[in-house]
Image (cartoon, rainbow, N blue to C red; front, side, top):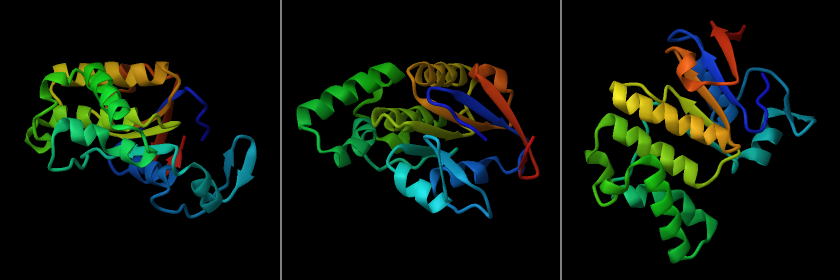
Length: 190
């Protein structure tokens, strides 16, 4: 499977087809049974590829973990490791919260939010560190229609901004307006 810079790819398949496993392999969380990775035209093992891109890939689980802190603290979390000044972090967090429509929830505890709001916080937290590849596992699960449409819009915006986005879903892939849909059945890409 190829994921190009700035491309939105949907991996579509039934529950249990291997979508999450594939995303976890791409995120470096579990090793593949076999395979060759090609990164920037250079073939390498999974371990070599993971070492090279581990700081450039973000995996967002379908049930994201949020810290027992405010929404703004959750969104700012990834910036702690980028050694940025407090004012710069604050400005980026405000911009990101506005982007996601979460400004009004900035001071609320992230764990007290609805499922759709939690997913948007996690998506915003991933976006703020500007990953080269964003892996989204069933990002609209347990969302109502309004939240789902908002999430689709945010994901499309990420892809249109030049980020590579790979989405695993069993829902209709059309809503994501992906450049490509890859089917997966029993762990094999079709």
